[in-house]
Length: 448
Ligand SMILES: [Zn+2]
Image 1 (cartoon, rainbow, N blue to C red):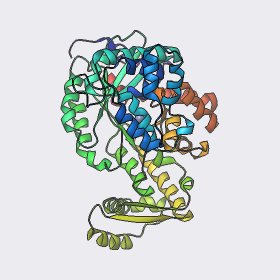
Image 2 (cartoon, rainbow, N blue to C red):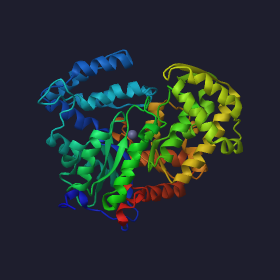
Image 3 (spheres, rainbow, N blue to C red):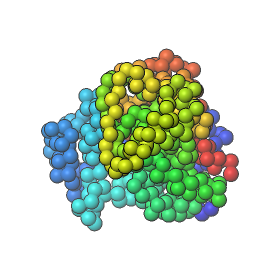
Image 4 (cartoon, rainbow, N blue to C red):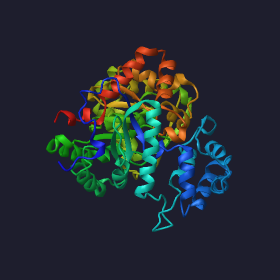
C-alpha cells in the first residue's frame, strides 16, 4: 500500500480496549454553530437567496441568519448566541426532513470561489479547520474513534492534522441515483495513500424513489472489491427506513430487510423496521404500483415464514392482484387503508423482518435525537430501539449530526439507557457492540 498518513494510526482493533466509538457521523453534521458562524463570516460569497427561499418554504419565515453573520463580521459578540439558536435543529423544530434540510443548508452556503452559483467552498483550508474543531470536541467528549460520512474530495484535507489518540475513519457518501462514476474514485482512494482511513461507502439523503434492490449490482461490486483487496475492504453503510412517507408500511419494512439481504454491513436508522405501527393510527397511505408489485413478490417468496410469524398471506388472491397491477403503469399510485388490524399485522411483519436482518449480521445504527426530531416521535416508547434490543438485533448508538442537533454521543447513550431501562449494563453492551461494529472489523479488513 502507499505511504502512510497521519490518519493511519489505530489500524488494527486488538488494542481498542474501552474506547468510546462514534460510528454514524456526517462530517458536516459535526460542525457546531460557532465554527459555522466563523466560516460564513470568512466566506467571500454566501448563497443567502438559496437559504432564505428554502427556509421560507419549510418554516414560513426567514430567520435573520444573514444579518447575524454581518453583525459577527462587525465584531458584535452577541451575534454568536443568536446564531446558535437559529442553527440548531431542536425539539421545537421537529417534524419533517424538509425543515431539517432547510436549517442544514447553512452548512453549505459558502459558495465555491470558482463558481458562485455552486454551494460549499470546500477548500482544503476550511475542511482542515473544521476537522481540527471536531477533534477538540471529540477530546472534550472522550470519543477516541470516529467514523465520518464524507465526500471523496474532502478526505485528504479532513485527514490533515490528525492527532495521536484519535482514530478517524471515513465512509464515502455516494449518490443513490448513480453511484458508479464515484465508485471508480472510491476504489482509487481506498487503494491509495489515504486507503487505511477510508473504510466504507455510505448512502444517505433522500431515500424515496431509490429502492435498495437497484443497488444489488453495486453492492455485489463492493463485495467483489473486498474479496480482491481484503486489506482495503469497504463496509457498506446504508441509510434505510428513515423516511417512508411515499410508500406502504409493508414496503418500508421490506426495504430494510432487502438492504440487509443485499449485504449492507450497517443500516442507518431503520426506523420502519421497529417503530410501533400503532403510532401512525388509522390512516391512508399511497405507493407506486411498482412498489406494490415488489411487495406481492416478497410476500409470495416469504409465504411460509410470514405465515409462521402470524401474517396472513393468500397466494391466490395476491396473484390475481398482481395480474391486475401488471396492466397498470409503474408510477400509477395505489392507496392502502390502515386500521387497527392491519397495523397489528405490520408489527408481526416487522418481527419477521427483524429476525431476517439479525440473521444477516447487519448492525443497526440508532441515533435517538435525530430520529426524534426528523421523524417527529415525541413518545420515547414509540422509538424502534426497544424492539431492536428485545429481539437481540445488534445496535450501535450514535449522534448522526451532533453539531446541528447540539448533542453528544453520551447524551444519545443516556437517552437509550434511560428510556429502555437498560442502565449501565446496556451502556457497556452498546459501547462494546460499537467497537465490534467498526467498519474495518465488520469487513474483516483489520485481520487481513
Ligand atoms: Zn445519517
